[in-house]
Length: 536
Ligand code: ADP
Image (cartoon, rainbow, N blue to C red):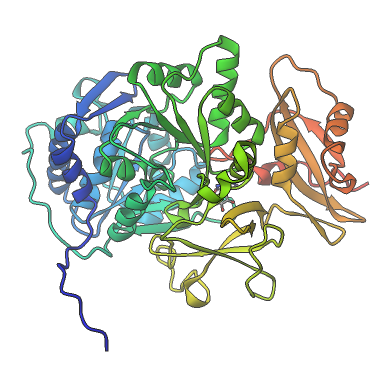
């Protein structure tokens, strides 16, 4: 029998994060754009007051411990307040994704079983449209000021006005549910991942560490990953734990709007999916502007094209890749330097960092296994199914009767990866995207990355398409920069100098690349549109 430790049993609670920020960094600012409203500016102390007011509002709406509350909202200060108020009273915030197709959105709201929905003003059309099919929602509240309230709905500012700026926050078990995030359902119905107070706090603490986001109180964080997508990578928590300033861009993710915030608010750190940064770099090239105070950009959700990292580096901005998924809260690995890498010299170290998703971090174990389930060597060559486990990895999906994990808690991510001797992991593909050509595998990610380096190419997407002889062959869809003329032959010539001949796509198509609700290349749509292209 072990000897019980004699330290306090104080449950980890999300409310303690904002309570701490308000006490330790009371005057540090939070600046937010909002739908059709002037820029909002306040500090952690004032934010905590309003979190208390929001908690009173939730009580007044009848929200009780364990209830789900849904939001359909952008990256704004009001959504940020809900991130603390809802879990603070022991309820669960379901951050619905407005970019999902209606059927998936309706499914997730009904599946969550929320009775209250808080939404941004410009989501009113969606809400009107899907309202007849929402089975459990009784209260609809618009996240706007009183001036811009919408008739027929509650108004957030009106509802919190006059509520006390103090709340007696309940204490409860740290395993209690706090956030309900749905996967984007690229395969089947969306699946709910229910984060707990414990998982969110541990993940937030780990996210700030130097091997991950490496925050300090001097950072000015502008999350361009959505608050509704896996809690914007936990940035609200990692940032508040470190007393960083926040700059919230609402839904205005166009490059001119982002650049204005970077310049005016002194943003040092931002993060988002590659497509946002493709547009941003285009904008800088077009206007001749510079990234100013921006020091670091974390890019995740899809592989970072090497070209993007090189361009940012030339502008003096460090690019750090992040790999994760909704099921991992989402931080899995992040690419940051180590002394062992530095020995490779600047070029060697950068090469390693830019071409890998990241390195092992304490708190989340990673392993790769072959088809027999046995671990593969960490030699950077062997690739296999990527397994993860740790205190912020899911155990089972919301309302599922069975665990989603295999033996010893390992969760199969559905990604295929290598791990090298430095502990760096490289995703070669998603299991469902890897192209099986004549018994060999072709990495769609590698092909996309190489094609993205070809001058004139904006985004390249590669899919495996049925082939009568080889089973599957790659087909590439390329979106070009404006005014560029590039032919299939020219692109193939570029690729053939860089990949094995049998990797070359059988067909290169030109046109807009469809994106998913989370801003990733929508391979399902591409595959479906071109599934018969190589039949004869
Ligand atoms: P979904 O897109 O299914 O909703 P997530 O948004 O949780 O799910 O995405 C998780 C997946 O995104 C990972 O399993 C991986 O395939 C992909 N992904 C995330 N980050 C990266 C990255 N840096 N490089 C390559 N793939 C990534």
